[in-house]
Length: 186
Image (cartoon, rainbow, N blue to C red):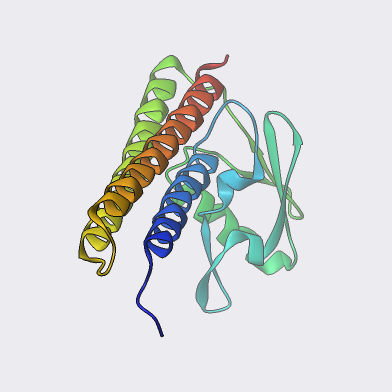
């Protein structure tokens, strides 16, 4: 196998930065806004059949209205466990069940809660930025170690990595702005 080329280092860095931006988007989808979305419950784990499983493996989750989530368990014996898991999650939601289906009305967000959520979003975003910076640092150190390449080529490739870095940070900022607007929208 031949040693990695400068182009390989660029490709590797781009993949790492893309992953960081995707991770930020995924984290954001679990942050509650004023609108019901099924991804809100993605991180809820239910005690069922002797182990902890993701909610979507024991029930179907739907958002029939902007302020309501419904959970239809495939097996009614896990109704109570689902309810308990939602109450235990730090989402601040209150489920009600009629013996067949669980309804979760989404209360309107208070101004204070919105601000807290914006802080959470900024924390996720900063983790994403750190990951992007880390990918840049790693790539540049690999480029410096690359043999049989002129200094000019190395400098050019480092500039390319820096541009990728800047573009990805811009992407994170755009996602943050969008999510912030979504949270603050009353």
